[in-house]
Image (cartoon, rainbow over all chains, first blue to last red; front, side, top):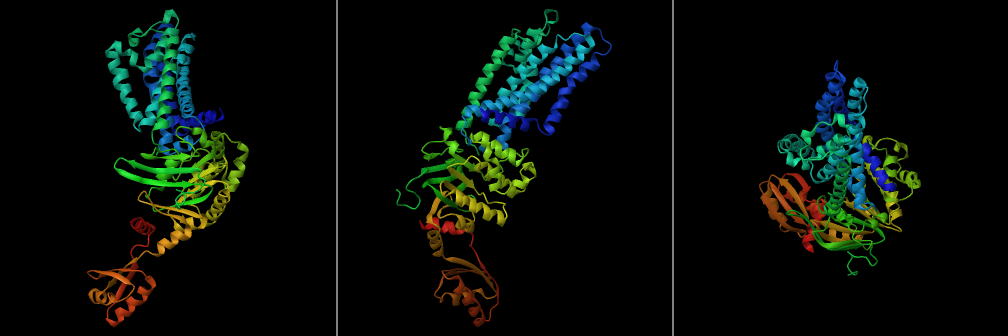
Length: 248
Length: 310
């Protein structure tokens, strides 16, 4: 357990150190700024509508994916690029534990940035409306989406140095394009897993955003289950890669 | 098997007909050897396959053919053996944002050993003054010592060091060599280097590798003896190459002479005798010698000769 926690601690410093945190922090502030400016002098019901139409898409389609793709890819990818992977694997720790620790760190880092961004945006509308009902659904939805992206891109980051590029292509072609045009493909969309949790947890009076969900059913339980399955698959795959691939 | 100098009687590491290739490039070819308690120097020019061999032994690379056992197991299948193994890789495998002390403590935590040994490991490599500074600001030599400290902290029974003296100054080098020799009294220590003098100072047993093959094995005096049989190649530049070449053909210690314009390529088994003969012959031929240079004194050429001879 000491080794596991040590890997998580060092990876968090590695992921959130220096310029990366500043850039992701600035990105994370965008939804709050946008929604704050867009809701000036509006009535409460309009403010919530604007939040769902501008802040939520920005959070789920830009902030969370970009943050999680960058941090997920870097978790093992940076170690491979910097040659420190050899320092890490020549240890009496099962490769699955190394993979789990790297995923835990990547997901935690992505969740911290995403949740802070979501909390700011949600607070911006809640201050105007005095209604804090969007806060918890926003944070849960974002955390689940961040975890899903981190899991997938942990593996891709170990496989290729172009994981971020692949992630951006996936994001802009698939997530914001093809999957919107064909609602039946919504199942193969990572941001929608988090969005189902968000919509499922909203009070009924605010239940909106049915269109982007496509064929998916809103609900936090199902989303959490998908996150767990993706996480387990990511750990098993990354561990197998660490066992079988050459570490050069 | 143990009668060959490439093998030891009580091995902790066994390499059995191991080959490793990357695409079309063969890095190690059908290599067999073993390592036991004591310090073994792995000697060879850059690109000889030393790093590949060490990385296969450490379980970082899978052999393309043959097998390697480390403490009786395949470490890729049984990571528990790493509790007794430490690797100091050649590349800068350090976390620049950590201080040296944090880095060594991290190594101890990963190896499951007590962090009480952190200070001792740092003292052993004489890094105490810089221990609380980020590694990113370290010189190459300091980084090397931080990596060695991170390896020592787990008190391994097998210590694999890939070019650990690179970038260190002579005083640090002497200190590290003493540390390695001390460790090797009870442990298996493998140190790779492309510098013969370095290996000579620390290793009693040497494996020489070139082009991925075992070129020579044994104690350092056996390697030295093998090297003393090598003919020297010398390049001489003169304004009357043909005349001097003719005279050189009659000299006993000259085995061949080739003329290339104003340049002579001479092969001899006695370099100092040739050094005396050439000026005498030039004087008698009334010729001027403008250059007299050994052509292949590099370690690489020495090892290539050893491989050809095997």
